[in-house]
Amino acid sequence: MAATHEQAAPMIDAHGLHKRFGSTLVLADLSLQVQAGEIFGLIGPSGSGKTTTIHLFCGHLRPSGGAVTVLGEEPSAFSAAARRQIGYLPQQFILYPDLTVEQNVAFAAGLYGLSEWQCRDRIRMSLELVELWPARKRTARALSGGMQRRLALAAALVHDPLLLFADEPTANLDPILRAKLWTHFRSLCDAGRTLLVTTQYIDEAEYCDRVGLMFDGSLIAEGQPDQLRRQAFEGDLVDIVLSEPRAAQHLDLLTTTEHVGETFLIRPDAMRVAVERADLAIPQLISALSTSGETVRSVSQYRPTFDEVFIRLIEQHSGRRPPLGRLQTSATSEG
Image (cartoon, rainbow, N blue to C red):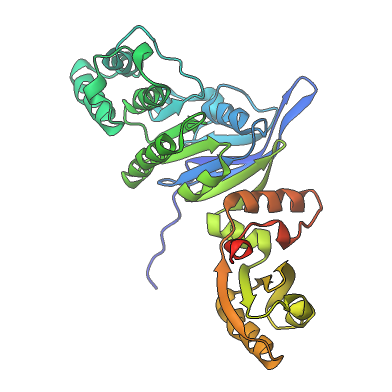
């Protein structure tokens, strides 16, 4: 047999992390791993524990319980070598408003111990990456909010870190700038860097390789975006539109069909069905309806948004099972 190679150690390895501020528990039993070369998104509403998690991983805070290693070291006791391999993009703009773009990045480079000849090349590379090289002589104060976020990213990347922590990098940015920043993040990942990004914009889960959904200080689900979709709905969702407004008469029929879970009436001529696998279930659904005398006008797989996935997982976490009818669909607006 060919020899097998052990999987590389994770860049971040957390087990049972807790954090209290006084008597208030803000993070409970967090366990996750982030592998080299991936974008891992911590996603959830404001106050869910994302920023506290970042501070624990960066060594800004000590955990109240549990254990974590980053780059193989305990964050609160990072070596100088480990710190030089980490970039940190905070939520708030903390650079110097009266320095130019170029001077701000040069200052950050000096903090990381880059030599003068290294600084020159790295400053230009990082500013070109975030498309700010033409604005290098402008003061940070004169930049728009989106440009300031990109300047902060350049400062976090000037020393070419292996691992980047970006805390709410797209907060308060318009959709175009949000998408542009994620393009930058993907280019970093493609170049072999590892990113842990927090965001309260649930739809940004689509940009990540893996996602951790946080709610009320707990990690309630973790996996690839499509895995979480299937977890939320226990499979796929299929929308069926009939030629006549008799969909309600067939809900019970479809629940007895193999591979079918929940069913829900969308409108008189349309229904949504949760199935184990759409490719296996759709032929059986069409057959069952045809046998009952119905003509199927259209069948399509419905892809829920990540907002819908997150709401579903939160309510499952809370012990409730929200109906499929809460989801919005193109079928509800057909003429």
